[in-house]
Length: 439
Image (cartoon, rainbow, N blue to C red; front, side, top):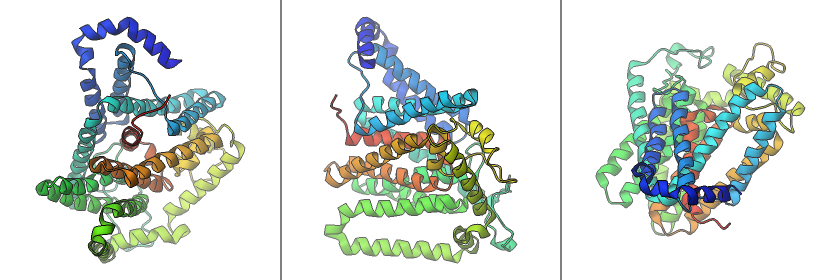
C-alpha cells in the first residue's frame, strides 16, 4: 500500500527529479548527513545529533517521492522490527502520561527512521559502506586521543561515579569521559564498545589489503583505545569488551584454523597473557574489575539491584502494554515503586527497559529481531567468499554483541552517540547479507 502511494507520486513527479540537479545529487547529501551524525556525536548535544539524523530521514523521504522505482522493502527479520514498532504505538496511546510518552516515541521514530534511511541509501550505494565505517574509525581515533590526554591531565570527577569507601586513595581509578555530551564515563565506555570492534577489524582489513602502514597505525590506535576504555572505569564496558574479544576470535577462526592453527593459538594466547598481566599489574584497574564480583558490597552494584527490584515490580503491574516510552515517563512512574533513596533515570538493563516501556510483546519481538540479525550475519561469515564484506559483517556482529552485553547492566545504549551506530551496523548487515528481498 505504502509503495503504491510512492509509485503513484514518483510517476507524477519524476519529471521534477529529471530536471533538478539537487535531486539528482541527493544521495550525496544523504551521505553527508549520515556522516555528520557520527562526527557530531563526538562533541555536540543529543538534540543537535538528532537534527542531522532527521535531515537524513527527510532527504530519504524526498527520494522516495521523486525517484522512480525507489521503494521500501521488508525482509524476514524486519517483520519483527515492524511488530516492535507497532507495539510501541499501542504503548504510546495506552500510556497514562501521553505527553511524556510521546517524547520517547519520537526518539524511537527517529532511530528507526534513520535505520530505514541508511538501508535505503546503501541499497544502491553499497560501496559507501567503507566510507561510513572509516568515518566511525576516524571518530573513535579522535576520542582515543582525547582520552589519552585526559589520562595525563587527570580531570576531576564531575559526579560520584564510583564507590571508594573500601579503597585507599592510590587505589582509586581516575575515570575519564572524553568529549561526548553529557560528560559521563559510562557513556564514553559504551561509545568505545560500539566503535572499537570497527577499529580492531580494520587492522585485519588493511593486512588483507597489504597496506602495512595503515595496519600498523590501526593497531596502535586499537591498543590505545583499549587502554582508554579501561580508564573509563566503566565495568559494563569491560564486560562488553570481553564479549567483543570472544566474538572477534570466534569469527576469525574460519580464516586461520585450517592453515594457521598453531600461529592462531599462539598469537591469541600471547595477547590474552599480555592483557591479563597488564590488568593485574595496575592496582586501581584490577580492583575496579574485581569490584564487579563483590555484588552488594559495592554501592553502585547494590544500587542497580535495588532499581532492578523496583522495575520488576513495575513490570508485574504493566506487563502487557508497559508504562509508556521515554526516560521522563519512566521517572514519573518509577517514583511510585522505588525504594526510598534510590532514584533512577532508567532501568539499567536495556531488555528490562524495553519490556517496561512497551510490554512483553515488544520485548519478545525486539529479541527475536536481534537474534535473526545475528543469525543471518553469522551465516554470511560462515558461507561467503567475499572477504571484504566479511570484514564489515564481523565488525558489525562484534558491535552488536558488545552493546548487548554492556546493555545488561546499563542503558547508555539508548544515547544517540551509541544508538545511531547500532542501527547503522544493522543496516550494513541487512545490506550485505540480505541484499534482495522477495516481496
